[in-house]
Amino acid sequence: MTSPFTKPVKVLLLDIEGTTTPIDFVYKILFPYARKNVKPYLAAHRSSPEVQPDIRALLEENAEDARCELDPPLLKGPAEHVPVDRVAAYVQWLMDRDRKSTPLKSLQGKLWEEGYGNGELRSQIFEDVTRAFKRWREQNKEICIYSSGSVLAQRLLFANTEAGDLTSFISGYFDTNIGAKQDPESYRRIANSLERLPDEIVFVSDVTAELDAAASAGFETLLCVRPGNPIQGPSPSHAVIHSFDEISPN
Image (cartoon, rainbow, N blue to C red; front, side, top):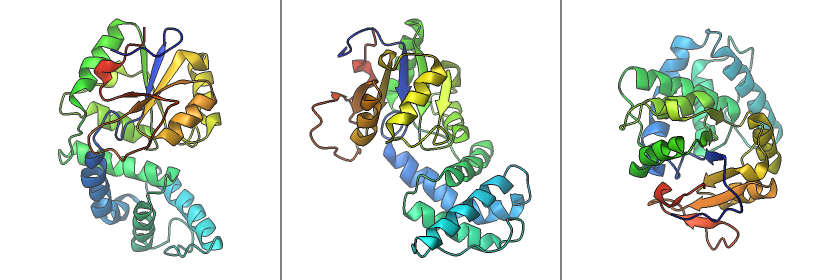
């Protein structure tokens, strides 16, 4: 195991995509499921109090995209009357651009909740994850998640893994409501929320720009290199791991 930290770590803050979960699961299963089902889901649930805030936020984002001349599928009218097919087209437009949009991620989480509930979805994690969660629990470490996917989507993923429900190991979830993952201020907010000093937290991610932001906020960092992850290039400021088996927070 590797322990590049200056003192014992109290919290392991984990990215999901490419860190706990194969990228292919996200891009080849979750995203296509959302793309295929967004229109019928909106047709069935557009008037629900849970979905209406997502639609209103999407309308605001759409108007900003139009002002910036990005040529999105235009949405006009109040949230309760805008055509479902236009909202679905805009959702797919955002997904084509891999936009880390908070209302998009919120809506995706609700779509996936339906998929997990009806048995169409079962999430994938790397085989070392469950083993590491158990070990870190025995070492009295906190495990938290920080992903651009909504908190709902995060909870669903860990509750419905092929290895079983892992949510009992996780004490906190953070999404883009706390801030963008490449903004150092987001990590300061996470530390404040956890009531921990920044250097008591290690952030593990497959994206160096996110790790750079965390390091700027005083976090310890580890670059996770998994099969199928995009090559990040040389990263001398972040220790590299290929498995959670290599992490010794003590």
